[in-house]
Amino acid sequence: MLPTSPPKSDESPHELTSAIDMDAPATSDDIQHMLEQFMKDMSAICRDFEKAISDLDHSLQRTDLRVDLLEITDTKQTNLQFEPMSWDSAANVFKIQLWMGKIDPLGTIFGSDVFQNQ
Image (tube, rainbow, N blue to C red; front, side):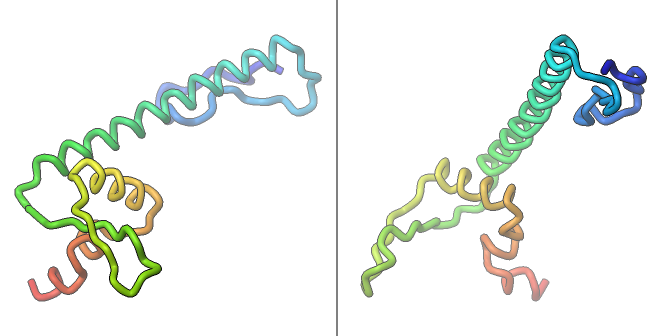
């Protein structure tokens, strides 16, 4: 169950490079090799993701916009309590929501009507 061909140089670094021959019996060496390759591939993906998050964090820190960000701390009472959110906390919330595809960075954070009239 060895790779059927070496990885091509033009392949994405995140494509799994171990081809699996489903008809051949797997040996413990084959399984060990596949697990090692999988861990290398996952490490590369994590490094790229961390770099993207870091780049976003740096660009959020460099912004000239000063927006008062508020965090709802108690939504069960009629008198909602608000606390100022630190820039680091706001950046983390923004990164998580952006990564999950839950927000349009300009529309949701700053209000969609702000950019419609321009």
